[in-house]
Image (cartoon, rainbow, N blue to C red; front, side, top):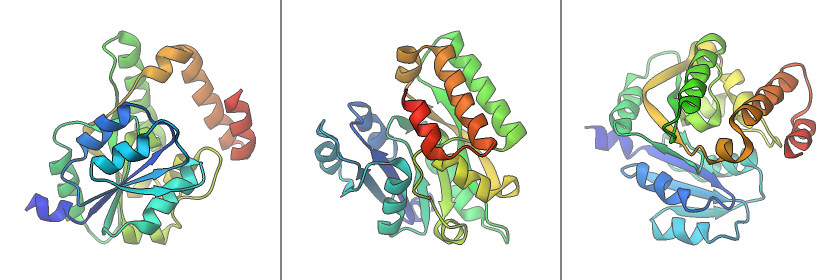
Length: 228
């Protein structure tokens, strides 16, 4: 039964002043065997909210890579689902995740969800289409698409590294195109950052970070540029 397979699933969510959106994220993963929230020092009551929702709460030095790694170290499940705090899984995720966990096979595969934004405008649809192309052409899903991976596979490739930025790209590149599978369900991310920063400006900044990383600029230096 799917519920039995989901009992083996640990959902790991890094937080830092995640705000009210964390409630939506936590509610969307109801049914997982374990939910771990790794907080980097929030001052908005997020850890208490997560604990009240039944999640295990860990405290960590701030930094998404180190927080994700800490969550994996503490997890008890055979499978990990890494999810950003402003991203919720759409209906149908339980069946899709359960099917992927069951599929197994000789070659391990990690799964990721279809990128979607909680915005009804055309710019959100265009960005979703561009992300789909990136995934199809470059096999490069980002962390806001979630990552489903078995414990054995995660440990085999060395897990998340303590990087200032690009920790998701670093891990996906080590997984490799042949070991990635698109799941037929959306991970719906809050569009507040794009609305706040400007759709074109934020998209170009993200693309610039990826280009700098691809030519060998260190994540620490990219982070400094990104924060500006």
